[in-house]
Image 1 (spheres, rainbow, N blue to C red):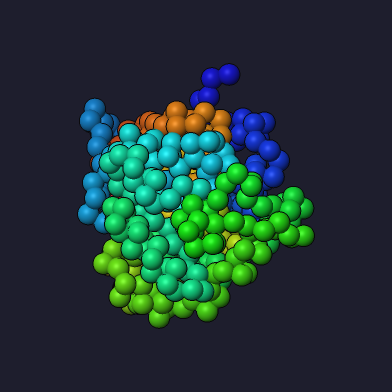
Image 2 (image 1 turned 90 degrees about the vertical axis):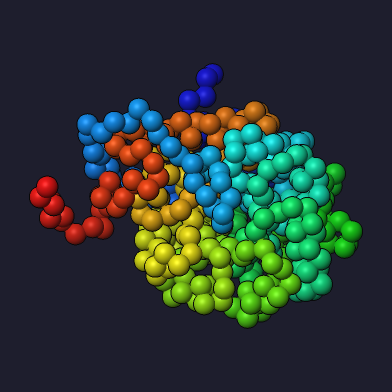
Length: 367
């Protein structure tokens, strides 16, 4: 069967992967309301396309923290990719590099920062969980820096792991032939089998629940890398992130895997963008499956988006080729959406190109 959109990879991944692994990637927290909402919310935003504009040339390039990329579509950190495919993060890194975009490596990757750097050139960010042992954190950040990673994406929504019931039912644990490679030498690379989710137990034992804004400042004392605060959903925290020295904000609800009944990220985006007032770029992850979704996020003020699940599902289905295809399909769809909306560059995408169902009835501007 020919794959014509990125959503179709999920069914293939479900067939190919062990149930425990598929469920780990696919599921959300508790009732999974936010999981569904992350997708559904996009359908409450409609286009106001402009016509008779010369769209024979379209430029999708942009810069993120000073790095030029081919399109505003990047790869979000997803853990343990070798559960999906033997090449895991190596394949994802090569696909991102070939597409001219950024890959974010998870702290809980099954390949180390050095492994991923060895795949060749590419702009890469490192997602960081803050462990109770700050020496572990400092060491990890230094290794990411040395391996040529360009930014730290600090996950701030996980003082405890969300309640993912599929993982509890499946007694989720990292398969015995894999390790959390970044922690292998620190005796933190394995996950015990428990009568709960093995990952939830690991987080409870290792991740620092006392993490606060002062730690965002502390991080800046141990690294010169820019810090993106990942997991912001409101204006108050956006302002605090900027005050704490964040170089950027990622509007994220952790793929709906942490607190259920938080809004879809696309619903929270505009509030955060307004609070940021252009002082730092704001990005979005969660629920992006179409080029139209990318356009909607940019129209609401995002500087770019990150995709997570489509990467692991396509990786499971077709390895590196699958991830390349996902990035290409999203790129092609986004380019088409731009053309049909009358936008030739990212700066031409404006709030006037969409109407959201929460907007007031609009007074049509007279030309």
